[in-house]
Length: 354
Image (tube, rainbow, N blue to C red; front, side, top):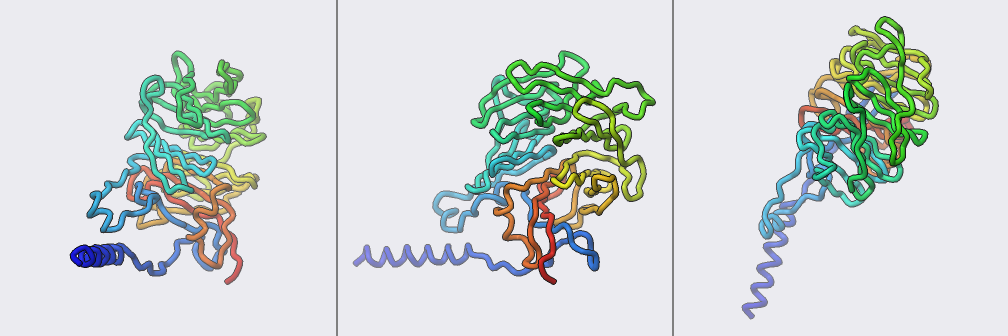
């Protein structure tokens, strides 16, 4: 009889903890850009600030039995990449990466040791095979890991070298070298042979790079953020100068602190500006289409943004946040170096009904 009453008591306690752990979610006003009555193109979906944003929260009963699990924070993110259902975030504070596995609601810190130990990982790129390429300005090298996060190699110049960003395209590794003021192109094999370095120009030439900090490579173009010239400069795969957009100023289409860049499938260019604390979008004809973000006043806005990444492959994990009147076309991740919303997730949407 005592066992019976004890069992009833345990069930009663569990039910109390379980019911207390439930939350009732109220509909909230969505954050959209541009503002009405213009047609909405961007909807803010959600933010990731720590492991609690991803992992399932413990209920009170679990906390009571095993103790409360402290959340793992995203500290000071810069670079971001995504591949095969995972998001990779460069975090200079921990000298490593936060890796989020979406289908498992898993949040991990990847802090390599030994030959792969990082000093100042600022940007990363992850290819379709889940090889991780990290631009480490402290090591002055590109550090490579395989899909199992095992150290593969590290390479770079012996002097006058500061790799700030890395991209992989056309079976080549493309690096923005801040100190050398060039784009360096390496073979994507065990030799990592330097294949090309550009531009070969002097200060005063239109194609000269003052401070190349970020890079994005498409099938036919190389886009470079020239932080020192307040412009995005464009080259072909052979290093031939093509064009630029931007310039210093506070007007539309101008930049104050241009940083991360990305290009979508329609050749629209996305440019982060840490001064304006927004992202500007230009079409392939260099026309400004719109901007989104703005100085932080709550979720959906930005706090010293650094990097933008466009993702077409992980829509299913974020569609639950999309307003019922919109259809999600692709995702836009933006890192913020300060504030609670270290990674903001936006959706490029099209209106399906009013």
